[in-house]
Image (cartoon, rainbow, N blue to C red):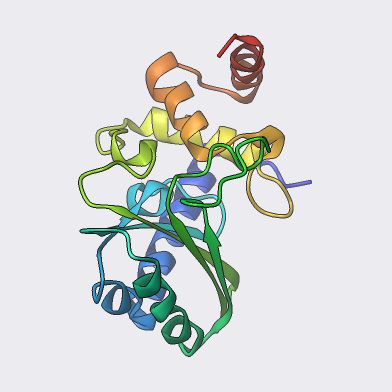
Length: 204
């Protein structure tokens, strides 16, 4: 179980995580590697100060998706200091949409890094997609103008749904929480629980 935190504590923690995230990306030179084949951008919680755990999301846009070029970067990532693990997954040609845990993944190439820092293990998720085509809803969801109250609500819900192994419980992803707060006015964990239940019961 995670200890209960006040809104101010959650906001300060999110700011601290964001600062550390930017420092890790800069110190490791991850963008320098990605820019060899793509136009990278930090997105989601790390970009917008909405972090509750050490996880960085990056979208890397290529003129044309090229598997060989992506695979060529894996050795470079593996040789970076503090990188303990490099993982590749093909979610473009090899889909498993019949699995609930996989069907919401973007249609692209995924590279996952694990960086061992003094503060603990950091997760870096890199999704490669084609320029001009949204990789997922992060590319179309506007998080730049959220209020302090909305920010606090997002952090409260994220903290409540955080799984001890990382990620969120019940198949929830960050975008679900952002949409609930920004588009449906959800402000607390109980309302979010009802919102998720309603969405799951709705026909698709």
